Image (cartoon, rainbow, N blue to C red; front, side, top):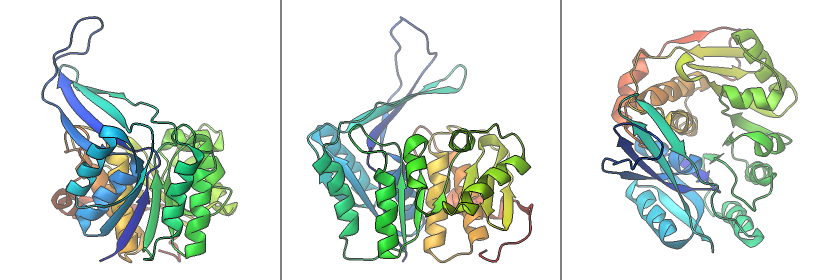
Length: 319
């Protein structure tokens, strides 16, 4: 059983519901709500666990919401290493407009972490007795955490000799890429922000990913493109995964499902191209999950043979 460790500095309890129509001023009567443990790293751990990994999630938690988060994580079969904090863990809200089928996502900033609290998260990762097969950190940084938080995670992963995957954006991503990260998973908007360029075709997208690799910042870029599928880029090869024709119930969690399946596959020693196939299948499966739920293992494996992977460059030695 592969061991996947995730770090989520800004977790949340994700609440999802629906209304007949989102309108200003009037009181909106919601349907019954559902609650899921949330935050990028926790979601990755949930997916890895569903696919068969021993998943261990490191995250700060505080207050009543923090207690509920820990209970929800454990209910997913994911082990928790919780760093207690003074602040109250945040709740996020996703609302489906049943008339337009559009989703509205309300994301709070999260509690302010004191220096001793965010440093404790890093200490837990650095001092774990077991050696995981993969480390993944994902999500936004909470108030109080330094921009180089993920760069420090990369240093810990390098010292431990464990491959590290990162999914974040903005200054936190730029700071982390001052050190080598094995794999990053930006979406199109995040890649454009990272390279400060208008990217609109495969050639420019691959070129931007290759530039990051050539600079020694990362080895693998898994670029998710929403309804356009995904690209996988390494130094001397690139692949495109074509999207499946699915009418989504919800698009929330598709990126986390994609990354969780890729991390599980790589931790399971599958080839890079096959891990990409699992990621694409998981991203598609997540579209069938309502609210803030994630991909189900049965749907991932059902979609796996349907995923078309097209090589659009010379094959990679690493693959």
